[in-house]
Image (tube, rainbow, N blue to C red; front, side, top):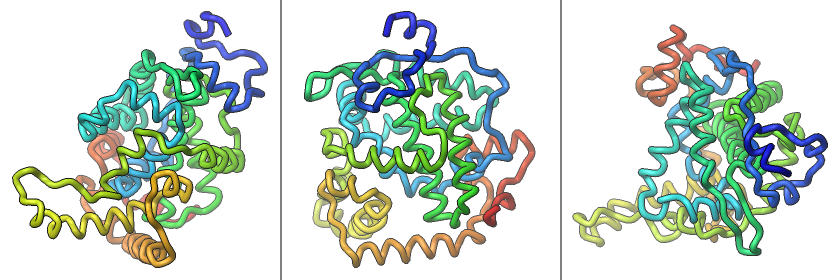
Length: 318
């Protein structure tokens, strides 16, 4: 690779044959800036329907956790983020630009904003090899966790998706990735390839410092405000801790539970499945909620802007 690729974003012929390990260890940023300005998701997409649904918050730990179980990404967060001193603040700052890449009137601007946040993020991991956040293999992994979130949360807590709908969400995810303006070399090209890729990445999970810290509240209990005495907080927090250990942990892949030291058994799995089934059964009720309740602000504003009510849309498998 040469510096030309960093400045122009041109892909290298034959680079799609690189393995994940080969590609990620190049640690070379590969921006792409020659995309169709009309490229965007819209109200006819399943991503628009489901990504901004408030039920997506049930997958917050799956989303953030799977990202940071890959060593290069976990180390990037450790080296360059304020997650250890301002966890909620980081989430508030990083979430809206990604939402706006999907829902704003200028998705290219916001996609490039997300990308350019990552330009200075580089360093080394435990074996001394380098990483760069705009290396295509690392950047695509981060994006893949968002595609997984739409697929998993919708199918688990909203309603069962048909195979064709899963394929559609994956294909929309490819368009979504283009909006960031990073090389798509080695991106899975079919839904089946994505599933194979996802399983392979789960087998690469390691207990990074970032993910161990980020899941500490599950193992130790949710920390309470200083104003509340510890014995009282233990009583007040009992339902929250039970939810975290039964529902939040239930959303996680088994590989993540293992590397994070999170207990799981058949009894908890049954509780989780009952909860998920109840949530799906309540989907008709959720679809009667006011827009301000059912959708996050960026999604709600986008639906209002295009004059479409999403609640009646896509409620049954295609």
